[in-house]
Length: 395
Image (cartoon, rainbow, N blue to C red; front, side, top):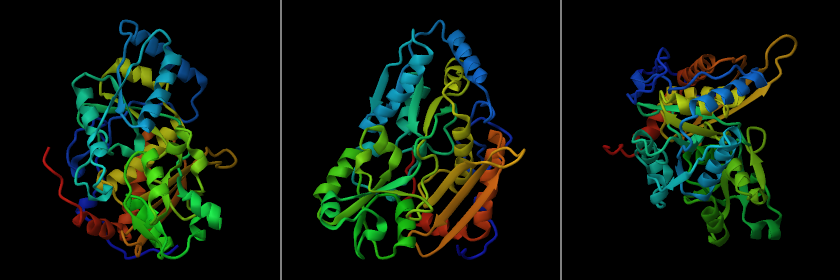
């Protein structure tokens, strides 16, 4: 795969410090990695989970109710219920009421995602309630979480990842009339519905004859827009979201490097459970929900994004997978990453595979790959995109 213009890393893309786990909310140049509790090694045994469960039971003995926050969308509520079911199995004598709320990203259904100026569109209001102790933990789609958390917040657990891929959903009428089921089947000029600059950039790179139309809303709303909008031939969505709410039958094609040439978003397919930093009762409880392999893979992805741009929505695609190292070697993490210009005409790609056994090692790998991308021109692509983005509004 071709690479583009070589460039030295600019100061704007200097790597964040890695000596302090506490999230500070400072600018990228001063930001350490997000606050993360220690997690077991990826080879941890069932005893680790049992120890975590015992610690959770001891720490929560005097508090029987923990309020869980999330967005009000059907998918977000379903994801919160998945986490609550796991917690309820761990602590059957406790209650975990779910508080759903409408966030900035939910309220504005007209502005395309790439035209929002701020960060934390789906998380900041929930984090405010977390800080005010109105909530004890918040369930997010990990891909929606900024890579640097506000001061006083911590990523308490990353759950086992579902299918991380994007998918193509072709209009049913076209499937029935023409048999179209993949990107390759769509004729030139076909309109794809998406508000993601990452998806648009990668699709434009591989399929320059396609056109794009902004589409926002929850999954049900977007599927209905596809059905009723005469212009749209298909939409691109996340597989995990459709599958979690029983809509997987709409999927026409799964998209990845080998099928469609599209990499997914950082953290896609995983749930992130956020809590207050230093709240040991909740942190110990969440340890039992952590999936070590998913946590390490997502830490690598989030470190890459944090190093490149600090959490804004930009055309960065990733794929991570665990592969057998062979012989006495530990299993290896394969990381693929891409940065693509908005028009799809320029792109820089990277692929590495190495052993990763700790959060520190994962973050170091992500940072290293990000700086390699920058050295080969990713910074110039991102500078152009960010220059066109609206300025962030003051809080």
